[in-house]
Length: 175
Length: 432
Image (cartoon, rainbow over all chains, first blue to last red; front, side, top):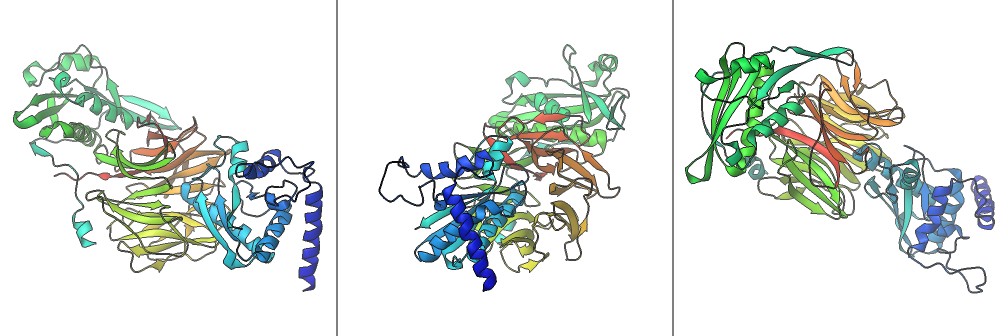
């Protein structure tokens, strides 16, 4: 119990840090840009500065819930600590919205074999699922799938493209 | 199931009449130094066949292209030398002057009923005698197959190797947001579609006699295995599993498969009957074990595993037992496929960040990186082991490449434009 609440406190402070200084992180530029672009495709994000109305947390770039992708190192499936606040926010949302169902979609870059990447993609999806569950999201609201290297987001044949393709997407089937 | 299996036969019926003499000659005068070893190429001339201009298919060109692709022959220029099927007027002096050890000559004759008669003779230039000869009768639609069979007869009689050219390849072509599973002749011609889907198709694998393909589709929203008859087109899903099922490969007897089931973090090897019954686990660690391949005698299975921390190639008895690691020099190896003699494994090795076709000699442990490429994938041997088919994406979309196993010849196959992946070389087509 002690341990868990300490962890939650830590996550909360990280979350606060993340929400207040969204652009001041040490993340590589490409994935960060991409994470916010991910939402703009489904919703014309309102120019926020002067609007007084409540923003949709999934499209407000200042809200961690707007980040729908977790990116990985080459051939890696461990989750970097910078994604923990984002996943904690999603876990909290999922736990407090019993109707929410999320499909975790693991992907890989084009290098390496189809089959190894299929397995690696599943591992990346499961890694995210484990963090969400540890943060309180019920397993019954989560599912995983691997697309291996079959569904690249970026089509280039270079590290910038590959970095965007090594990821797990959180796909809300329902919110 | 039995119905499907019993229908496993070749697609084409080839009528042929024939006879002849057969001798193995292995002489060569061209020696090339490659990778520190010496490799010989047999100088051979293949004349245009009589009446070839009237033929629906350029038979002699198909034969020459086959012989070039395998890297074991040096094609001697045959322009300007009159060809003749009759020994009395054969221009042996001209071939000797051009340095040819052997010479192939032939003719194509339209026959009654739309058939074509194709005869050929392979001559020993020094002895001025026939090495092998044959006569075929085939419809226009089978003339390419006749040419590949002639190329096989030439190759077999000159080298003592088994045949390779009269076989087919399978691959996945991704174009216009659609995945198409295709089967083509070994030279990439006559491609036809087995399956089209908006969802990914992966990992086609041949049954031992070439009558069926096993492959992976996402038709049910996740990776599942299907087996499809190329004769009837009928397909069925192999088993029902909670997680992903993938990487199917047939046993040499065709009655069962080795597959991979992925659940949670672990991907493990299983054996299963080809009707989906009798699932048996082969590996049980929490690592990724995938891409199994049976040794030609069926006693061993090679596979990719990252149980040591990075993907490496392992072999283990197909009856179960302790896996042995067989790749050591690099940190990343995937996609093992046995050579037809079981002595080598071809795979992809990451070298200086580049993914390259590599041969592992199982006896000596020697590794031979075969290309200077960046993005090779999915290698497999020709039925005689003398060529390696793989996909390469160095210049953008994946292309099919055939590399001779001696490294001397590299050919990009011409297939319909698209992003080609997951090629697999099938068995020799049965004679009918």
